[in-house]
Length: 303
Image 1 (cartoon, rainbow, N blue to C red):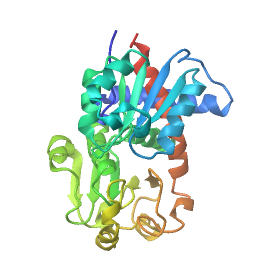
Image 2: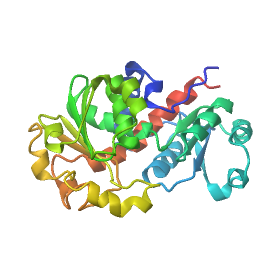
Image 3: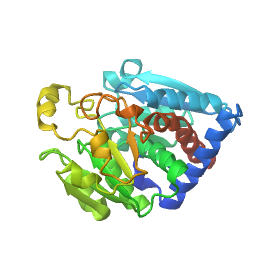
Image 4: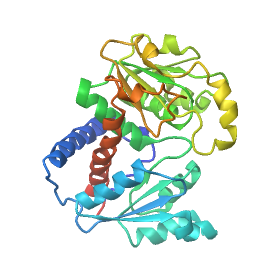
């Protein structure tokens, strides 16, 4: 039995990521043709959510169903974790009952401790540190349109929070050049930059960051957990909106991505998602197929 987790983009090397992307693209093609293999028949996924979700929950739940498995949704109100049970104890119990678990929580330590105690694969479905499942779908989307991203130029505009930090790690793993432009005081984690920022340039000028970019990415200015900072962030992030004029500074064949949900009129202009350079809705759809590929991979040798 080989136990693998996906807690960070850094958990897998480039070859593994590209194999997952290849499988995800094949699964997308099969899905479009109405074909589904029951590769996870008899398998059960526990989905533990401490924060709201649309794309992550639907993609995991639908993905398990399409592959012949089953998913159980558990909010904080549905488990004893909300009543003080140790996360390590919950991990041991669920390991006796299900085949794989995913967790969405702002507390990365909780995910790490759960994985350390579990005897089943564990997936980080988003924390305040990182969102590796989103990056996997983003890379699938880029590869399907432009091929390998190695050596390309990527610009991340906006908040240096979990999505930006995920791209810092991804730039190291996938070997692309990353230009980050964020307001002062909203930079990505300094430790993550020291560890994975060998191909990252940090700055505060969106126009400079997107110059000649092959891919431009952004995220909301006030992520979950930042609700009390919304007015402050609206002021501080002025000038960091991605719009058609900013995209025009990138390469002619640039792609634009956003993990969604988007706040139109804030981090993006009102109609940017309808711009032909935007692949945000395809990117969202690829969450289904990349997560199916991930589940297959984690469960392949897990028992």
